[in-house]
Image (cartoon, rainbow, N blue to C red):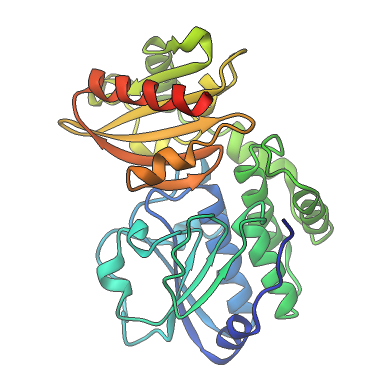
Length: 325
């Protein structure tokens, strides 16, 4: 599978329209935030208006990323919506309802830029490239199609998307295109050391305490091939952590020798959990998430599950065991 060029229809819309709303999925990650900030800066360099609106705030790890403070978050639209915008660009989001803002966004023409296999092609213009290592890499190709030279801040935001979505160039999507884009962005002025500090050396104390709580809940199944862990309301209270402090915690059990799949269950209601799935190699967790109304990638996916904690864990272990087989 090879990457594709930005479609001319998308380039034309970005050239012709003047004011854009940018958004991504709920609980945005590094690829979502970096892509939004990178594209916003590219559009502004062309004299366009660009406002980022996400339902949820950025992860605490990324609070120092230039541009994060300008992001409008929450369910109330930003000033001027909808009449002050020509279109909404939806980044790294396979379906409009994954934004959590779909009731509002339907009032504007939509431009869809994504790399998820299960993207629903819901927009007026769709650019879906499953071969892309990160949507930020697609935004970089978009800048080339628009003939925009990047400054250091824009290049750094897009480099962050690559590091975030490839797990520091460790996951199967660390393709030749990923390394080539990373090298090109460094030549454009990206600062890899700053990205590494944001992602790996910027955890607030509450996040570290929450990690300790999570590790105490760790269970291994299927002869050590499956790891499960949980984050309950009580754990957040004891640690003093916020929901934005959970970014990357699911990757810790994934690092255990012999573990092939991980399920992290974060409580979001009395009997409701946000499930984060991770896997190694050919084990496909995206199918599990998609069947439950969620989505993601082969090795990283998520969805919401209802039920008692032990019941949810038992179902997940059964599904992950089948995926391993």
